[in-house]
Length: 309
Image 1: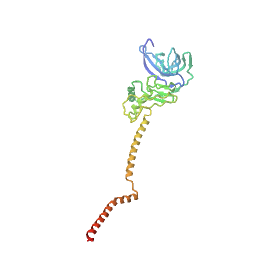
Image 2: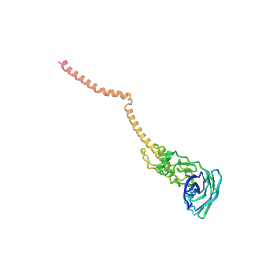
Image 3: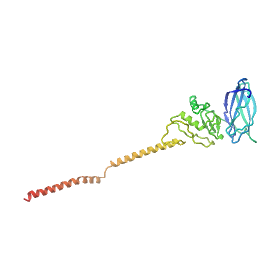
Image 4: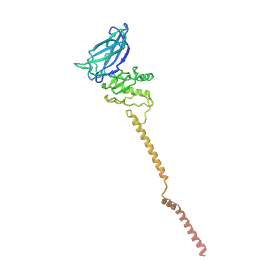
């Protein structure tokens, strides 16, 4: 490997993980020498435990396309200094052959943390569902928006962990929202993908956390131009707050309309019959009084002019 340049030819991610294990097998890569054309196998692992890993022993088996074993051996990674979340091993070739390699099986044997070591064969494998590929156009949009070409899959939250858009699986034991392989933020990825799939309905919400995962952090919103709803706040409860804001305004308008209808109804209410009679009396009393006074005056004048002579 040191005397010849090897170029990546293909890679395959682990289709399983080992619950409870501080070390996880991540992927296998196939490289080819520029001069010899030899095939080299490199394995990648990740430390998700709290302690710094200083060494790792694994057992691997390489087979050809027909399923025949080409090599079965153990390999030790020494003088490591892998902290929590660190990936390693991708620069070391565990096997070099002239033949085409069809598959590689890896078994974790023992991890070393300074003077302490831990047997890893006790942790049983759990098969993972394959990550879902994004449609090509949507993947291209996501890659352009985030700035990473390896984002080709649908971010998924499973019962036992989550898939990044780069295809990396992160078990619940890892307790992180950041992908240790591509560096993406799980919450930012979901928000970005939601905005691309439904831009008119995109709302920044916290991503659902699977049982046992790290406590949720506030949503980090991407710099996107959008019109916010009245009274909207930039947090995980935006949608609920918006509903309350709109409902409050509608209630106020409804109250104003009700008060107006109340005033109109009061003005058009039917009067009490006694009030109606009183109104008639008050309306005609002045006219009747004036008429009586005029008749008295005329009678006095007539009496004085004609009857007294």
